[in-house]
Image 1 (cartoon, rainbow, N blue to C red):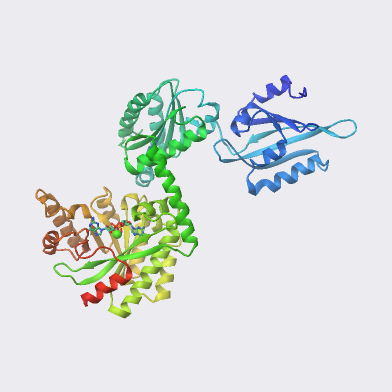
Image 2 (cartoon, rainbow, N blue to C red; image 1 turned 90 degrees about the vertical axis):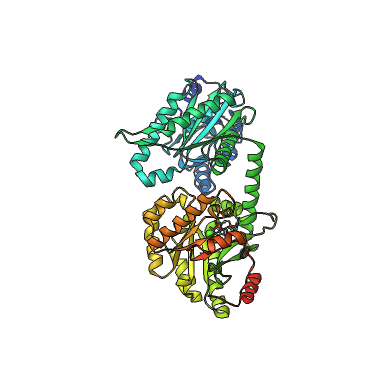
Length: 550
Ligand code: C2E
Ligand code: CA
């Protein structure tokens, strides 16, 4: 092996910096040696690489490949003395980071290139420590070999942190993160490592430990989050969820560890908020299904929304079966996945952003349908569901106006329902939007009112037309021991009346409940008792059978 590699200078330079990566290439054999730090950080196959130019090219961002190839070709052909360019290279986390790559060619007396040596510097400001919290950054994870050590890792995420920022502002948000990080570090064993994983997520790598000890530790972290005291003396309580992974049993590389931690935390947040969930086969299966759904959904969207359909569920006037409107509810049958419920596939759409296109499709179908039925049956109120994420889309209003104009709908017959109001982190912005929509004549409804803890708070900020009272108060209304549900509904209706809002009671499943709520003061009722959500043809049959639209 060439002595350019067995050089103490190489070793000395190679270990000199965390952020600088050294390489030297014997151009006769086309073998190069890379410093240990570069092998680890860029997940290279080893220190010695044959045909490095090509191997390295595979690490470069496709958009930057031309820049790199042109520069290196000029250096090797003698057109340029030094290699000097900037591009993005893929690191061990699979992320692209900006590097500055410099190198030069040494030639023999005949001018034949013999050595190419240089260094790469990370220039994206990725440092060892997080500037806000002082914790390690995840770039430092490459120092650990998870196959050679045993322990457990924990990914802790603050629940609804966007909302905390919405309520208290960015500065307080930062103060919370600093204080919470300090508390986590204090609770950790000295040998454990704490990283700032992302905005409000913290990674703890604990060595020589087991699930029990980690669960106990999580309990203390949860307690710490429950009472964060700010410099001003203000006390803020937060809930935290966590994902856990045991290494090396469940993960023997960083990539697998991080991947499984993220899935476990996501699972905890979605299914068992405020708890620690260790990675399991169930989580793996859920994740695989979500990926399959995502692919299928993307394909269907590309195929002009193939497999998507709107179902309709009537709104009736209390004490009658007169249909005065309906809610549009999305259904989907994929090419491969045929059995997905709205709650499941809508979540997948929201997670990867597909809800944007599908939401606009729903909006157009709902508007078109209202106009079609107006001509056939007279005016019906048609409602459709919109999540906070959809409302915040820059194009939302434009699309609404576009379809309203295109089909000539009367906006006062369209109700837009805000689902999951608990996700609203900027009520002021939403409130301004609602005012503009209402100014143009559209009706706005707060969906599932009463369950989300944010409901009442939302009511303080938003002006709406309808409140939809959540199923859970209604379904068991006729059962013994549910007097409290009656009191809650009765008072919610009184509140609607005082505020001048209309109300819709959802989840009326049977005759007994229909009789009870029929005597209450709601504007409209909805539920399986009147009809399940049905396809368009069946809804038209209902309308025809009913013969009355009011
Ligand atoms: P939601 O807006 O609360 O819709 C009402 C859900 O309750 C519907 O479930 C409906 O089938 C069901 N339901 C109606 N009557 C009864 C009843 O008497 N008893 C019981 N137990 N359930 C009843 P579905 O269709 O599965 O929809 C679930 C959720 O999916 C909806 O909840 C809504 O949040 C969301 N969703 C549906 N379509 C869309 C859409 O186009 N866009 C968005 N963003 N979300 C949608
Ligand atoms: Ca709804």
